[in-house]
Length: 185
Image (cartoon, rainbow, N blue to C red; front, top):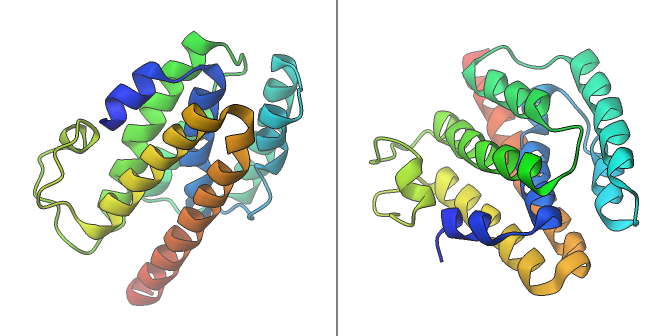
């Protein structure tokens, strides 16, 4: 099943986790530490109401804005993901956000990948056309699919695995950003 189809079928929690996972993997571009989004993740699993999501998101947003981060196109996309996160965790609001985060995160990985990606845009990747895909984009696509599949198959119990997938992706992106800054600096 394509990423587009998985997003279309996901429930509110799966959509919120999908968008949050994309944002979490891009935290290195925002200058944040690895724990900055943990309270937002917790709001998905600890039975917290939708208002807790908004409060925790706003706290993380304030910390990430204060942290700064790089000023390139990839960082700008990550900041847009953060700013677009809906304060209201309704299915309609998080569906639009999760879809936008998916595109932004794949585009970020495409910008940071030293290998060329043959596709004109990441949309074809999300629809399942993966021929000639660059390694960093391919790994991000797999992570996005895994998060949605785990949550669809295991519900709230899948949040731990979704977070593990996100942490793995964050480590990879942090290494890419670090290598890139050494090469440029």
